[in-house]
Length: 118
Image: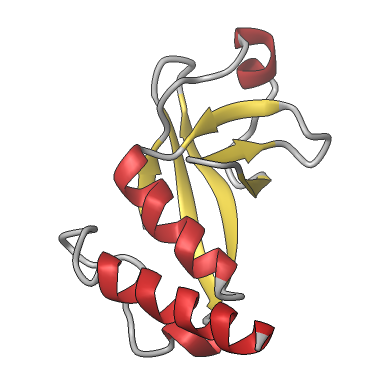
């Protein structure tokens, strides 16, 4: 999935990025940030995609991300699903409508977490 980042970071950090460079997805409380391997902030995923991918990552799904396009005001990353967590195996990471099944996915993950604690 190609994703245009929001809330871009410092211009000097963005200027050093090259197409094809691998970057890191870091989950925060309400969003997913994109950072360099040296932990420099690049930008964030849009809220709808952040919400969905936070659930997938919590369920042990794994993703890789790479710089696809960078012209300082418009930064696009390519996100690839490497593996899917067992609890979300029946759900698509990148549907056309990102809110599809979002409540059901959250419930599945919460249920699995609750079952583990008992």
